[in-house]
Amino acid sequence: MEASADSVIVLDFETTGLSPNQGDRAIEIGAVKLEKGQVVDRFQSLMNPGFRVSSFIEGYTGITNRMLHDAPSCAEVMDQFADFIQGSNLVAHNASFDQRFLDGELALIDRDYGGKFACSLLVSRRLTQQAGSHKLGDLVAFHQIDNDGVFHRALADAEVTAKLWKIQIACLQAEHGIEQPSFELMTKIGKTPKASVSTMLKKHALQIG
Image (cartoon, rainbow, N blue to C red; front, side):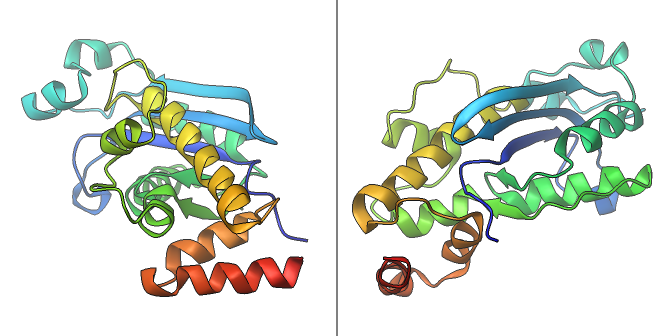
């Protein structure tokens, strides 16, 4: 049975850099749990990577070395987060980045997860092709998503990504007649060439109709 697209965990990492393969680590995780489109739980924590972060990352995220000094270790936080995400599919904006860090951090503590990832950025590029940019902040402005003006903090970004995800589901309902999109359909949209998306969605609507 296919999973529902509106029951997922939307997550976001802040990190010391771009690549866990080059020694970069997570310094914050934020996540929002949706069930049938409603927020039912949240997870947020800073985590100490065991070394000082660069002044660029301090400026970019607003997360300072002083804030991280007393934060729990990556291992402690990620062990709790592994429990939080069990049994759920996952969504992130530019998901390949967040998945790299999730996989990297969990591998260090020998934990795993069973859910699949979907990318709201890839879905946006296909469902909202008229948007000038698909960066999260630009999509917040494009869709007039309610927000607190904070970006590059994990929970704030996860919150607005969850709102974006719900808009994408509503778009499928309103514009394509797909009443209850599955998580599998969302991942398929993200992998379909832009020019073919409309045809694919028409076929899907006919099949389920």
